[in-house]
Length: 510
Image (tube, rainbow, N blue to C red; front, side):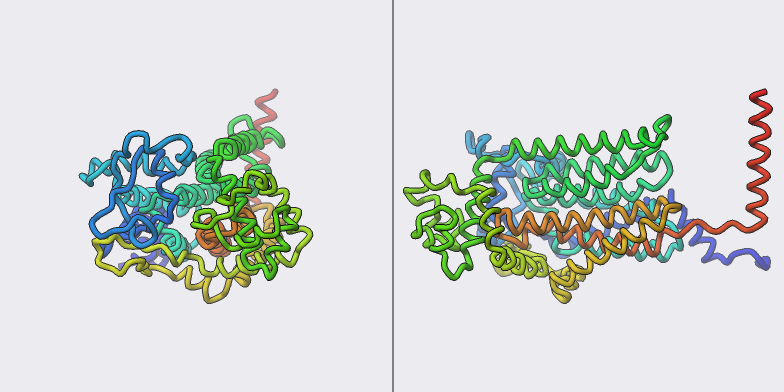
């Protein structure tokens, strides 16, 4: 028979499961298992290569193995990679950066699991599922409040991370996987910057590792360093003797220097060919592609008028601008300074590009890359839709409304941040939500005005950051409760304790 004030069994169970040291690991395990099921149930899924794969996988000196009936590009996901032929991979055709870390870690796992070839991307997908589990465990530990609300927030996070627009990269040769993983870990690390000294130190370490992985994944992700560094410069991590007004900022500033160094490495050691390719496609596809008078635009950009014939043609086509015999004489105009000057003088063109970007953002997922291997028996180019609630939300609401909503969240978060000086945990969630808004903005601008092709694929970091920002908003509202107001008796007891401590301290000094 229960006593009058004794909690019932379900309440006791919820209280036990809600303890952070148990709740976090359980959520992490559940997320990892759910992600394995999400990717491998009824056959594994991935994403077909769009042509970027060889330069990434050459970092491991491997090349794709095509199954019978399969195709290298666009139609089918190809998981197996074999040792590359001698001299097939050189420094000129190898994409550097953190994008090679995941396949490098997955290679021994692939061989341990008995997959054929040098590397099978299904092992990489399993590794990613495990990393997702770790990230969810870290995130769950930072949540406070009723167990049901914490579970709902974790489920919302899974809807974003497990959506086809994100999870499809798990078994691919693309460096986007490293960037997405880095952004996830940076996010879950940042929410601990409002916890205990030990939690802040661990959160800062995880945030730094995630940010380095993100900005080192590809040239496009480099601009995301701006909001990440801004968050660090406004953070404090008081540990040990580093508790002063300025000394508490020493560790965040050190982390910012490490992330900045990783960004500089990405900038300096990028493939030279891509630098010219991106600028060329921005001019001839982004600016001139939908121009009513491409010849006029060509002249204003410094090219002969007949270069207007290349409007809308990208670098990889049979008739491309760089194949023109006069290219060596005119390629000096292929600079971002020239592009920026033209857009400043033609704001209507810049606005047209942005409007197209909003449509690409809402599309959220490239429609030209298949999800299945040829062995699945699906039509060429078929895409899976096992979990698309988040992308469905983007398409329904539209890119403009989604970005507007995220901007509103950032503004509201800034206001709430100023009104929460006594809730460091809430401030950490709000700061990361604002940071993610900045990440989306920088990625939108980078994708729209940096290359202007495959915009939906290039917007993936911004699309993911937006989903994470929505989750941060929900977590802030539901799982960062204010400290309870002490009763009069508790305040009196605290005052007595303070007085006694002061008395003992005085006696000790005497």
